[in-house]
Amino acid sequence: MTLLDALAGGTDTPICSRAGCRERALWRIEWRNPRIHAADRRKTWLACAEHIDYLREFLAAREFPLQVLPLDEVADSAD
Ligand SMILES: [Zn+2]
Image (cartoon, rainbow, N blue to C red; front, side, top):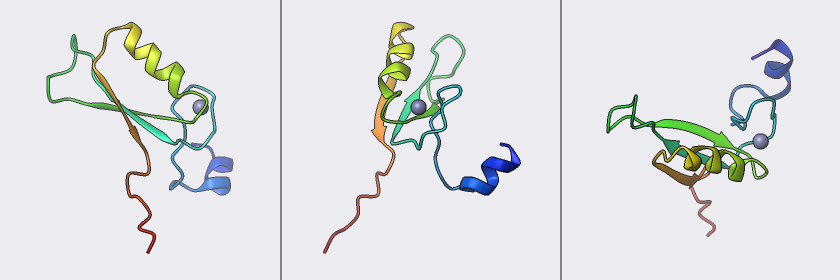
C-alpha cells in the first residue's frame, strides 16, 4: 500500500484482488490449490463487481475448489 492509498481510503476498505484494480470489493472468493494446499487450507481473494467473473473463471479453469461469498455477510438488520 502506498501513502496515497492510505490517505485515500485507509485500510478498512476491502479492495479487489485483481491486479491493478482499485475498486471496492463486493465479493469474497475462498479457494485452494489442491496440489500445494492442505485440505483445510483456504486462500481468500476479494473481487469487485466487474472482476468477480474473471477471478472465478481463472480459478475454475484450473479446477481449483472455490466458493463465492458476498463480502458483506453481515446483513444490515433493518428494523
Ligand atoms: Zn476489480
